Length: 67
Image (cartoon, rainbow, N blue to C red; front, side, top):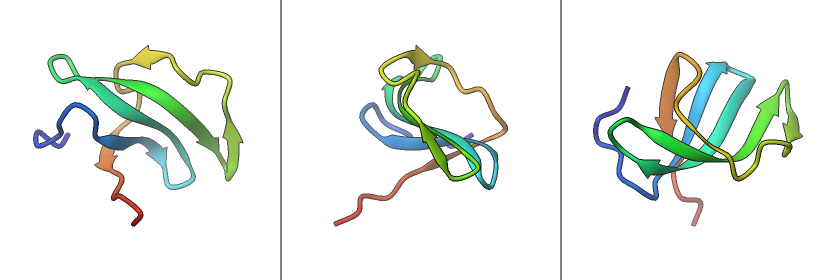
């Protein structure tokens, strides 16, 4: 788990390469993030958007800003 995360960072909580949660870090200890999308095999699921959760899967990564 990356300890260099900051509140407001965009992250992916990854199960495997094509299934993951995306969100914005809202708390560091314990790490919690607000879900912005869930991706299941390339399909976007918005049913949990806005919910704040702790990491669920095995790998976290920062999403680089796209500008």
